Amino acid sequence: MNVITEKRMIDFTKTTSENFNSLALSTFQNQITETPVYGQFCKALGRDFHSINHWRELPFLPISFFKTHRVCQDKPVVHTFESSGTGGNRSQHLVNDLSLYEQSFFPTFQDYLGAPLKEVSLLALLPSYLERNNSSLVYMANALLPFAHETSGFFLNDFEALKNQIIANEKNEVKTLLLGVSFALLDFSELFPMPLNFTSIMETGGMKGRREELTRSELHAALRKAFQLEEIHSEYGMTELFSQAYSKGKGIFVCPPWMKVVCRDIQDPLSLLPAGKRGALNIIDLANQNSCSFIATEDVGIVHENGTFEILGRMNHAEIRGCNLLFSES
Image 1 (cartoon, rainbow, N blue to C red):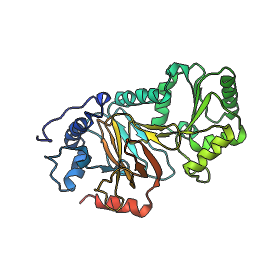
Image 2 (image 1 turned 45 degrees about the vertical axis):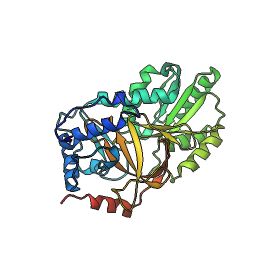
Image 3 (image 1 turned 60 degrees about the vertical axis):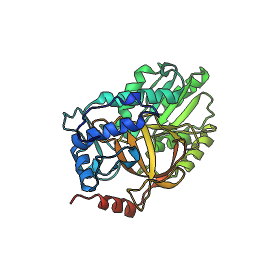
């Protein structure tokens, strides 16, 4: 099979465990020629990619390329998602087709909820994202809110209004999800601790530069105590991906069928590790049809036999630099 000749975009929503490999290979066949920076990256590796027959053999693009290169196909850009952060260079995801993003997050979020969206009050506490343009998380929340319970809405910095809405929802036994950036959830929990019976809390990360840095376990412990909850939920997503993974507790994340996470050896970035071994995370996101579906992140974690995964932290500067130098342009 000549992997260079076939150019077609797959319907990633039809992904199953049985056809994941073939769909990943088809996506690779398209992107190695249609996404210029990915094609150049693969060529620079000096390997023969004409005889690949399994996704584990595919090359993963370092996520830092989204800060320094144009990672998209040669089509009109209709939207740009930009990462948060306190540094200068921010990642940019140049989007050719927003419907791909919506096709990914709507069913994934619905599966996570386990209940009709219209029956769930979605309360979004995302001040740092709302204060800037081009947040993929705000775009997702904006798209979901019209289909959620009538009490749903955004809360910028109005903690009093948020408290009142949660109390009303609790009184009326409305299933509620408080979706929030970490530092804002912590601020809210310190001002208005209360026992919650019908409300779940999901943190989306986002502590850097706002408060003293906490580990995820420390953050969850503080939120559990403030709201008398057994578990805190989490979202694992990023600007560079169209798909998200969700955790309902204990830091165990579940992916949609078209997203797969695997660990690579931190000391040897081209080597993948078996399940259960600690390493840096590589992600295949088949929803990224018009950019790059094969991303080497800077997160460290463990992937389990059943495909679920945990986040343990971030690669340090030396490890990131070493990985990037390996793939630097000649």
